[in-house]
Amino acid sequence: MTTPRILLHLGLPKTATSSLQHNVLKKLHEQKRINFLGKCLDYNLETKELKVDNYKGKFIRDCAEGKVSVEVARQNLADLVDPEKVNVFSDEGIMVAYPGKDNLPLSQKFKGLVKVLEGYNVQVVVTLRDPVDYLYSLYVELYPDHCSNVRSVNSINKYVDKLFNSTEDVLFESFFFDKWINDLGKNFELSVLHYEGLARGDEREVSTWAEALGVSKDEFRHLFNSKKVNVKAKTGKEVKKIKDLKGLEIKLRLIAAKFWPVYAFLRWTYNTSGLKKIFNYRFVSSKTHEYPSGSTLGRLRELLESSARSSDEF
Image (tube, rainbow, N blue to C red; front, side, top):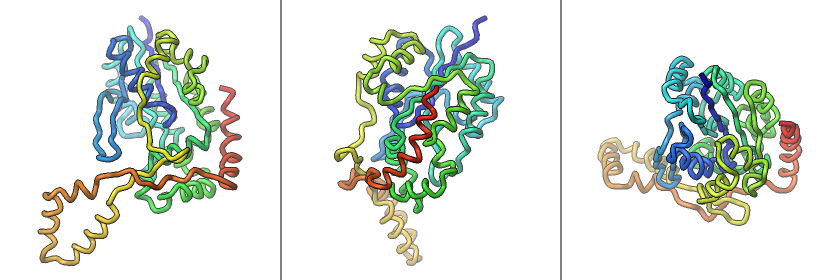
């Protein structure tokens, strides 16, 4: 009996993961050529609405993060795998540490993945990108829901300063490529690709994905480039901020709470009149997240690029 094959794609975030999930993996799954376990989501940053297209394999991430037992995850996986097809799970969120949340170190997450996937024929694919571009892009992605709510990292400058002062903080672990790639490579057959090569359609990146999925290189290129996904509003290289009126809402609520006789009525009015939706609606600001420059950029490159170069042996 053939051992079921699993292709585990871990991002990194901001390395065309959405394009892979929506344009390639979803389409091949619909054609019944692979067994795609997700994730494939649509999240509207402005309205905070989440549309789940496919997240059948979420228990894999939950187990890696200690939220589901290994036994439950292995049973769920056994029920879903197709021994006749490559089974694909793609979730870049496993690699992310979220400000304001409790985050496990990557080494612990990898141990969870090893336990869940034991006994299967597993190939892991990760995609890297220029480390400073990755840091900036990830911060922009995390800002609306996470960084903006944590005073110590509510600007890109604060985030970078915290990195300089706390390089061992789990928040920044994914930026030091060599540390976690070595760990991952000890446990799985590992393919390390580069975002810049994938965006250009380079031979190495395209052929690795095409072979893993059992499609031709031309078909992979066609699918991957079929639609722009998750495009941000930019001014030059800098991405515009997503803002909301949540801060004003909190101030008004604190003021209203002082007037106990009418507070209940004001709260009812807020919840039923549409004001809540207005205060929570997000909009694209004219201001941008500043891309690191000058001496800060130099320090970042010195700190992160040596780690990135050490990962090139994979």
